[in-house]
Image: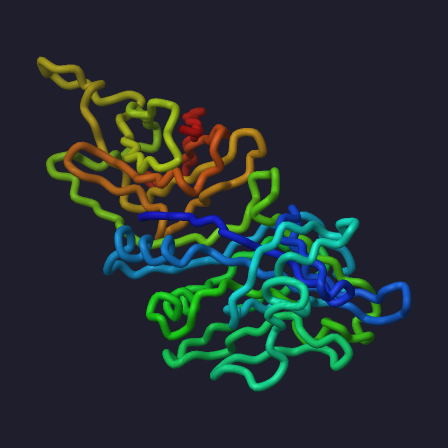
Length: 371
């Protein structure tokens, strides 16, 4: 298994109420719909882009020929107004844009990057509002042209629209399968200019929504551990145990002997597991029965949590976090680049032995450090 994460190179929110304002270094991304003080209906959408070279390198050097999935992950900072179902749509952006150095409601207003009306700066590179490129489109009120342009299809014929729907009391974090969009970028059928996220026509700009809808997400400039992520998952599971036996009792000890405790962000660490019965069967032998290593069943998985927040950084997954095995025992690989530096993390293992499912939490910690 493998999980590899990329973080954005830029992101920004587009506000119809402030059409030339840039918010390129704001800590929050917003996808809202609301009525302003003048009684006009307004909306916000946001853009997020991941580096194209990093995407290609991940697919070329890490994923290779393996089957993979790619997920866009966004973490909610604040939600209000969900008294009805709200659907967010994610499309690949059509048209280059500049990040800028603005924040929401800067005074004076910052206009040196992307906004609702312009792609690059106020007065320069307006978003297309007619005569779109092949497969591209846009939508906006006649009185507020702009708000980005995006692809709804491509020459590859893959479905590139992804949606997430929320209602009262649902989890408003976002995990979208954007594999088809990444395949389009990788093939060159469309240029990677990132994603645009917007509300669907059911609520965006429409008075029928009856209430303000606010969905805020952490940006790449956040001071938290929740920046947007582009997460690649592929299956590199291998199970060739040699002469080692599979553990047959749930009453066992699982240890992590090669955890040195600190790792560079560029590290790829192969963690090894030692597995043995809690009370091994007594036999007549010249060696210690306590040094005999075993392997876990094939249905065993690993997970990583942030130690301070107890948030799951990489969750148990029956496909992508399977524990592998070779003639030396069990192992799994962790790409440290997808974990925030200067934080501590905990490793957990989940397995089912003799019909008993157990999660091993033995306080195995490590830290990702800056160089």
